[in-house]
Length: 156
Image (cartoon, rainbow, N blue to C red; front, side, top):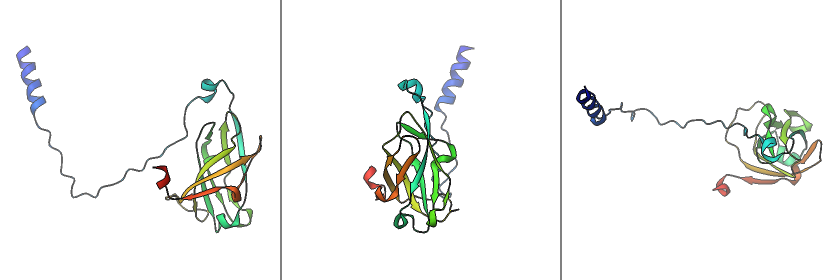
């Protein structure tokens, strides 16, 4: 009996595995979605988490016909659900609110950004927007004071 199992094991271990040739199919790039960290900052730091909402002071030059911002998580904060995407338009129009949870109010936050109309689909962003933040309760982000970087080459 042992010899039979050994024979089957050797047979299976040495049998080549053939895969279908997929060279006739176009290569696809998987789309990856990354969600906010699930780290329990309260447990790790001993500090309480607080929810903060952000309001933007518009910069018409940056906004143009519309500006889509996606909040980039970073300690001491992480984005809350639908509150990580904000569209800002001309004439103080906006769609969505910045909502983040933090162990203390941030002094700076980062967004990916791109110019787009209100209902534009997700697409490649134009780069990184680093903004100073003021306020201890409601956060204020003055878009005219943000450092705007185009492209992602500097992150390499």
